[in-house]
Structures are given as C-alpha cells and as structure tokens.
Image 1 (cartoon, rainbow, N blue to C red):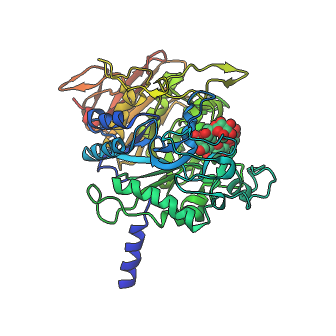
Image 2: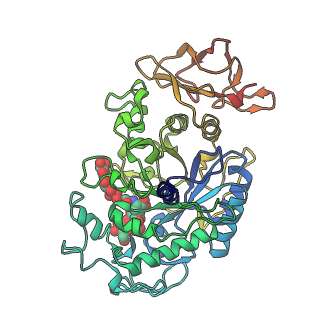
Image 3: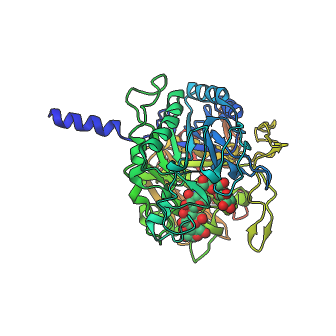
Length: 511
Ligand code: AAO
C-alpha cells in the first residue's frame, strides 16, 4: 500500500502534462514578439476577462542582434546568454509581467531555446540585446559561460558540422541545425546551466515551457534537464506542481524521428493538425469537411492528451518550419476563422491560438522574400500594441485573439470543457455540425451552396445567440438568433456567401 502511495506521489510530481491554467480556462495564446509591458496589460485588460488560460511568450533570454537583414524576428532563436534582456523587455519588466498575469489567473509559458546558441558564422563582438560579448568562432559565450567544451563539434561526424539527413537520428541531434552551434546536452555542466536558467524563470512564476527544436535533442537529454527543474512557485500554484512542458517536434511522418519518442517528457506539437485542417478547408487533394467526423487520432494524429494543437504558428505562417502551402493564417481570414473555430470547438488536443503582426508579404517564385521581417518597430524598438476604439489592435499588430469569432470560440471551449463529441451531422460534402454534450453546438458551411437544415443540437430549449455573427450583451444578441425547441432540434440557415459561414451557440450564449 505504502509502495503504491509512493509511486502515485512520484507519478504526480513528475506529471508535466498539466498546463496549470486556472480552472475552466482551456486555451493559450502565442503573443509573438510582444513586449512584456504590453503582455502584462493584455492579461489584465483582455485575456483574464475573456477566459484565456495563458500566454506563450517569445524567448526572453539575450540574443544576437542581426543587422543584415535588419532585426529579423528569428534573431531571438540565436541565444547569446541567459540574461533576461531582449527587445521585449528587461528582467524587472519580465517579473512584473509574470506577477501581474498570474495575479489575474493568466499563466506565462516561456519559449526555451536550449538546443543551441548563435549561428556559427555570426561575427564575434557585443552585437547582442544586452551587450554581452560572444565569439561563435571560438565557441566562447562568457556571459553564460560556455566554451568549446560545451558544444557538439567533436561528436558530429558529418565533416562540416551540419546534419545531412533527417533520416539519421544521431546526425539530427548531434550536428547543427541551420548552422546553429549545437550544445553538448549530455554534459552535466550544460544540463545544469540550462536548468539554472529555467529554474530562475520558474522561481519568478512561469508555469511552463515550449521547448524549441526538440527533434534536435535526445529525449533523454531533455529529460535529464527537466529532472533538475524546481516545482512551480507556490505563490500561485499548489505545492508540488511541475512545470508544463510542450516540445516542438515537427513530425509530418516520413522521418526516422517521431513525436512519440518525446511523450515521456510532456506534450508535443502536432504539426499534422494545421497542415491537414488547412488542406480540408481549402478543399485540396479531394478533402472535404465531412471527413472530419473522425478528426484526431482517427487521422493518424498522436494521442489527444499528448497533443499541443494550433492552426498556424510563427514559423509556418511565413513559410518557415513545416506544413507547406495548406497552412491557414490571418492572410486568409475567412477560412482561418473557420479553422480556428473548428479547432476550438473540437475536443482533440490542448489548443494554442496564434496572435501575429502584419508584414509586407511578397512572393517571388513561390517564396515570401519578406519572411524575415520582425515586429512593428521604430528603429528596431518594438512598437507598443495600441488598442483601437473597436477593441482591435493598431500599430501593425493583427491580434487574431481579439477577433470576435476567435475570442468567442475560446469562451465556447471553456463552456464545453469535458463534454463529449456528439450529434455529428454532415451532408456528405462540406456542410458539417457537431455538439459538445448538452453545452454547445457548431455548424459549418464550406460548400458553394446554402446550408438549410434542422439539426439535433443536444441543447436545452431556448433562444441562443450565435457567437460568430455577434455577441450576447445583457439580454440581447447583436448577431443571429437560433431557436432550440423542446426536443433539442434547431433550424440553421447559412449562406455560402455569409461573411463567416459558421454558427456557434452554447449554454452561456442563451438569451
Ligand atoms: C537563421 C537563418 C539561417 C541561418 C541561421 C543561423 O534563416 O539561414 O543558417 O539563422 O545563422 C528560426 C528561423 C530560422 C533561423 C533561426 C535562427 O526559422 O530561419 O535561421 O530561427 O535565427 C526545423 C526544425 C525546427 C525549427 C524549424 C525552423 O526541426 O525545430 O526547422 N523550428 C524552431 C523554431 C524556429 C527557429 C528554430 C527552431 C531554431 O520554431 O523559429 O528557427 O531555433 C522538415 C523537418 C523539420 C524542419 C523543417 C524546416 O520539414 O521535418 O524538422 O524544421 O524541415 O527545415 C515537408 C516535410 C516536412 C519538412 C518540410 C520542410 O512538409 O513533410 O517534414 O517539408 O520543407
């Protein structure tokens, strides 16, 4: 008995699968490249009142300053040290953000870049966000400190230090990704140094980590680092809480390294999700929404309780990473809202919403030549996220998470949390509907003709406000109203030319 108790305590302690969001909050948002000051405000003025569970932030540690091209977003994926000092803010601004967000029940998840340091070809000097000296050529990062001993140069056997094939696991993990100096994660010094960085963040109050480039690290090395991490700060989290972990592994199938190798450490990004959903909504490759009936594991995705899901991310919305042309983004707003709406209504996975900035996208030979452009800025200084009178964002920030359709579906997901997937209906083509127990119901029309159908919603009788076309404000609805009769049926009519060809109702949108 005692033995089993001990085992279950250990099991609990090492559970890195719980996001520690406040009860009833089920989604997080990636505020890509935002300043800490703006995130703190956003937690208080928007995310907490609208039921968001947490924020994935851009890497908070010191990075190289790239001037050619001028301050690309991706310079933040080239660490110089673990000082909390970037274009998003300094250490005191970071602490202020974490405290203020936690105080309103919104969690902070840090993008942890621990696989590597800067590119090997970057010049030595102090061109870094905190002015720390570094010399990639001699492998010298004194502000950490790391030296030649701490990199995998000797371990990689490909000749030029880069991996040559995604199908040779040891190359992918022991050699360089994109020329980035690969840390020797089997060394206890390197593991401890990284753990010390992450522990500083945990002690400040972050709830967990998105771990970058996990495919390029041995799962056992990641585990060794995670084993060194503190429990979460008890000012905000129950004693014994472990940091939430989600690992970036791009597994679209066809490579030797698979997502499942990483399940022991925490959740894993499911890149098939956005790639397939985009293909379906674009009706490419003969796909149709009717096929979404068994969406999830039925489509060959990883188990739902290991999946971190998203329609697009900061890489594949601009052609980096993977997923290809099918990925839906704010550039295809109408389909994008449907995609995010579907994701947030469907029970599969732990959901992350993307929040972007505008950039002058420009294609040459099918490639966006401006895919590097960083966030809105004045001479390199990131611009404030201003809020317009209609609650959208200004200054070049897209703020998809503030779009009514997306924000209201985040609330929908909270309302239907824990409810089963029920009452599926389809027309054999691109008109589909499903419910979540007796709490919510959603209907899509992605066909080129009108939808007109009486469907079983599973909801109690009454009049409901469609949260896609409007909002319930007091006893009124600013959008379409749906009447559910005593038997749970309701009539739906959605024009194929509707601004948003989908309707969603839930028990808290009942009038
Ligand atoms: C920059 C410059 C480089 C320069 C380097 C060093 O752009 O030219 O060499 O600096 O000086 C980001 C940017 C990079 C940037 C880097 C550092 O995206 O452009 O490099 O910062 O500043 C792989 C990794 C994955 C990674 C992704 C970008 O596995 O971990 O590449 N994502 C993360 C971050 C990302 C960041 C880094 C890692 C580095 O999210 O923002 O890079 O910290 C295949 C593989 C994938 C592989 C992709 C892309 O995908 O499976 O593992 O991702 O290729 O190379 C089909 C296949 C699919 C395949 C895909 C690719 O769809 O089915 O499997 O094609 O076309």
